[in-house]
Image (cartoon, rainbow, N blue to C red; front, side, top):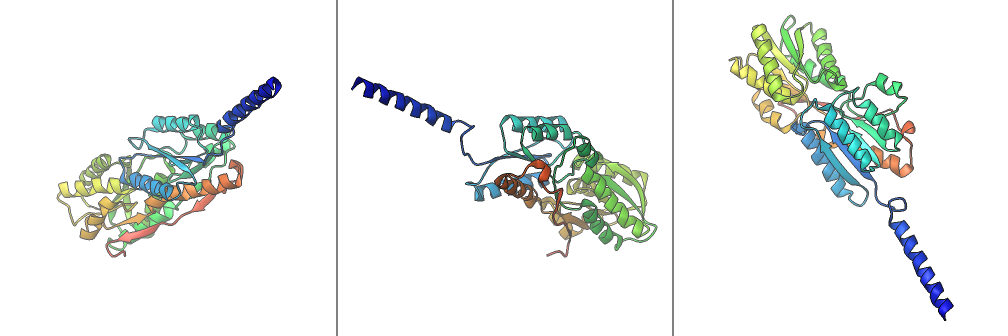
Length: 318
């Protein structure tokens, strides 16, 4: 009897240890944890992106958990790097990243990938050369920003004439999508023989966009249009046009189709914008990492690019 009792105690102890191991992270079969790291949540575009991601997670709550975060302003790359480092420390399975800077975030991405975390790039493409230097493959899931901006520029060109002068308000100049949108605007203006008198950065923000627009209007009294790289800067440009007493004389176009721009499209203060479906941007990236995690696809074997739609939006768009 004592032997049996001792054996029972040993068995119980062994089962307790095994139970503890099974409950530990190494043995747990938890659902994947995905981190969404965005740019400025002061920008309506990224709030919409976050809302779309949270709605998707809620609809797929049994499949993954979501940790969403964003920086306070568009240029705080140091804070965004810390967010990636925090996600790594939290042992997430994947990171979906809208980088504030195309080059500065690459080392942090490399560190995450080296820890076995899948990383997918949305919104603003990471620099190709910087990725090659780190021997890194990071899929870009998003629209063709140059083509989208050209759609907007081509539409503007129909309402002005050859030889007219326009100004471009660029986003953060070190970001790929800002550069591509400027190129798209320039493509359209060149094709229509319209003169671009200057390209200046409004840092993606309303106030800075307003300052740049006001300066351009003062410097070039014969300016007929302002092409803004996003709708936040377009909002600032609209205010500058009004303050200069040139409402109805200087056209404004933007990019993103945020809710705040819609009444301005309706009443003509903004001529056109482009919609790249903010609510779906993060979801496209999340769905890619979900599939990759389920298939145990390593980072190096992920697709280089997944193109998403971008469309022209005007007063007459349905």
